[in-house]
Image (cartoon, rainbow, N blue to C red; front, side, top):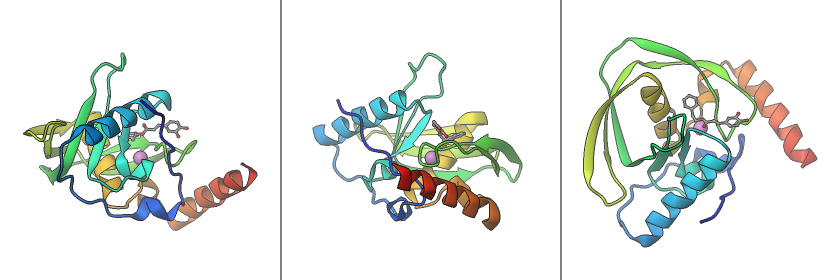
Length: 167
Ligand code: QAP
Ligand code: CO
């Protein structure tokens, strides 16, 4: 197991479009385990492979209090099931220290593969719907700050760039 380095906004590598996972082998399952360890250690509730500079369509998530409900989404596909939107103050391990309101469809159908390549499907609502949409955005090179005004996004960018220079 290993803690992986998390890319931070405005790193251009976060803009990469991830490629579908084609091979389900031990190396993939090792990556999944490392992503869980990295997410739990942060601590976070969701992590996309893009954030650890691996450009594969893979997301790990655990929304439970006890951190004992790991979920894996490989090659996830989303279909909004309503035009009703939910607003939530989102954060991101790649935008540490910043939280802003984002509107997203309240209910989505999710089709994905599990760690063995077996397909499954679910209907997501509430925090699960928000989180899977946030994580799928990462696989398409998109960040929650992209939904904010240019002014807010640029302020966050400048503050993080300043922090990165100090490090
Ligand atoms: C994405 O985010 C998410 O700023 C997962 O300093 C967030 O795990 C989906 C974190 C909200 C839906 C709603 C953020 C940790 C973790 C920070 C996270 C920080 C430390 C964020
Ligand atoms: Co994120």
